[in-house]
Length: 312
Ligand code: SF4
Ligand code: MG
Image (cartoon, rainbow, N blue to C red; front, side, top):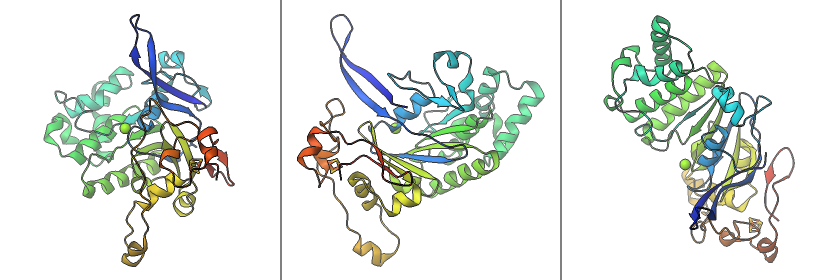
């Protein structure tokens, strides 16, 4: 609720911040148990920061995060109440320690939380490897011996080690070959059905989250501009930004593809240190009116949980 994460970017002589990067600026949303919420937006819009703040890698500047009804704060972190939440990272090359064997990568969270030792630990690691589609004999190998897709499977296995109920997937397929992306999405869906997992699935374009998300939230410059059930969002997008993002996705049917009208966005994303007044999207919006510069549009329900932040 009302989550904010600001980063200091400039400091004065005394080390006090003089400017802030408002990476996440007052956003509120819910994720239901067993659901996948897609979170989409261009790079730098605050989606990774949102994920990292939820999982307590960052301390929120303001706002509250509740998980299973419990407030997540420093105290909860000390008591490891957030263990039920895990994260899968974008870059399986960078997020796996190259000097650790697969066994130790998956075993580390088990050790930290004192969950399994000895024979039980070895069995658990073998089971998890099988669950993500890898041979348990791979346990003694090192990350460099695997392909990108296999490495992401190892990253998923590490996240699963402590039996989480909620996983934040931060662009888990963006760094992979297109041919591998569907395999990883299928694996995540299979694991969700089998283990009853809940996902926050972060991606930079709407095509990537289409098949996995029950609902989708679209972010722009630190704000959520639209959030709706997937079918609704893809068939009846309301926010001009969502409409532009959707128009960029090619359609397989050649007739429809020939008719597809791309909405080209003017300019680049403005500097997040100095976001436009009023509606942050107004510098790129083809419908911008005088009111859009003076008044920030609230994220409001337009019926059946379809929320949009636009004066139109
Ligand atoms: Fe465009 Fe105005 Fe709507 Fe913002 S509030 S998206 S500028 S029409
Ligand atoms: Mg990111």
